[in-house]
Image (cartoon, rainbow, N blue to C red; front, side, top):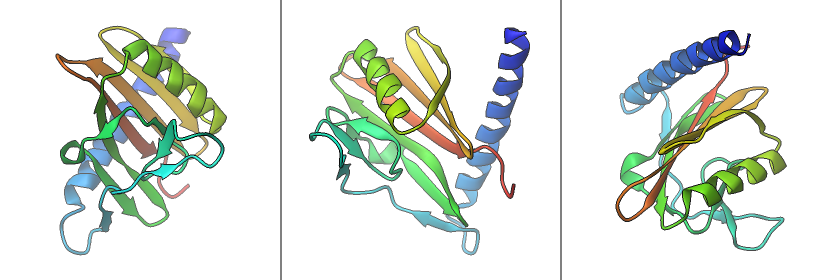
Length: 156
């Protein structure tokens, strides 16, 4: 049953990711939406010290040890939803980041659907109207984090 459930979720994720890629690829054409630049100044969390920041998505916390990689980030806003990819890097332990996101996302009312912990770890979170997949992987000098946000369905 778990394999069947993961298969359905994987299919939903793949279809949503393809739709997001298609939407973001069209975002720069005139008349197809209002692309927004990635936020230049992160907002400190209102309920904590400066250890947590928020960028383009007010309910996705980012540890302050991570720096935004602008060239690998893009945010698309179309109608009432915002989706996109935010990329970060920093000198932070992969396990610490997994712990941070697991705890901090729950505080922002995200439900953890599942996780993969390996060289390239992934955490999948859900809210009623959105999915968030966070991938964490290490390279030579930095640990990289990619945060993918997408709507679960358009025009529900």
